[in-house]
Length: 59
Ligand SMILES: [Zn+2]
Image (tube, rainbow, N blue to C red; front, side, top):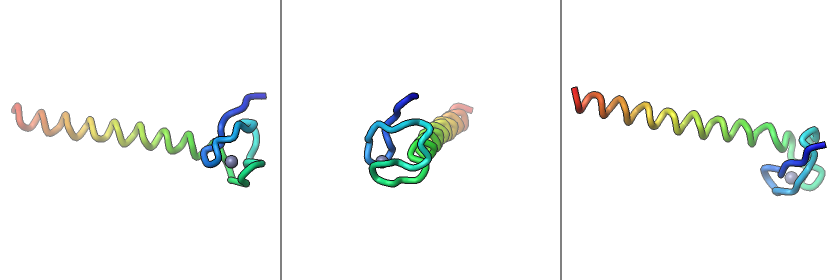
């Protein structure tokens, strides 16, 4: 059984737990992954904009 920290209270809990037994947070892992994916998507978006601006300046 794998343990990962809750995104809210950072207590190690089972990855299969739907609710954190310490702080009662719903889906303590799922949203952390979603937040990470959003951060990656945002980062990629910023680089896409920078490359587009650079291409416009150079052309
Ligand atoms: Zn928690």
